[in-house]
Length: 164
Image (cartoon, rainbow, N blue to C red; front, side, top):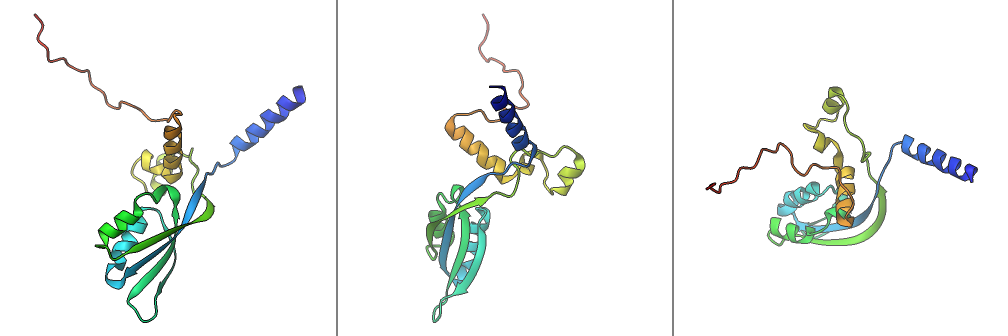
């Protein structure tokens, strides 16, 4: 009994000591669009954390094919947004491509002014990065606690009813 609990505590401490990473599902995204709407298609993909793999032109046409990897979390509504931004000139196809390790530690927070300046982010919320936002979305969806304040800079509420 004592050996198992000691090994369990040792494994837990070792896992918590190292940097923690999340793994997220990724789609392979093929976007077909005309050359005049190419910039708008790139804008939609950039807003959704897509990684561009390849861009090529179909022979004999003015249609470009953009191959990218897109996180599944960011993919909801991308087809409608692409059609809206490109006036219907872009088509999108999504296929499950596997899992990828996210770049940042979801529990990292800048502890000094230098770390905040090095991350080139203006405030602590943006400094936590995409992995923390993804983790908070899943925790909120499952009904678990999320480390956010419900009320920030609260003032005393005044009642408008007259007292008689």
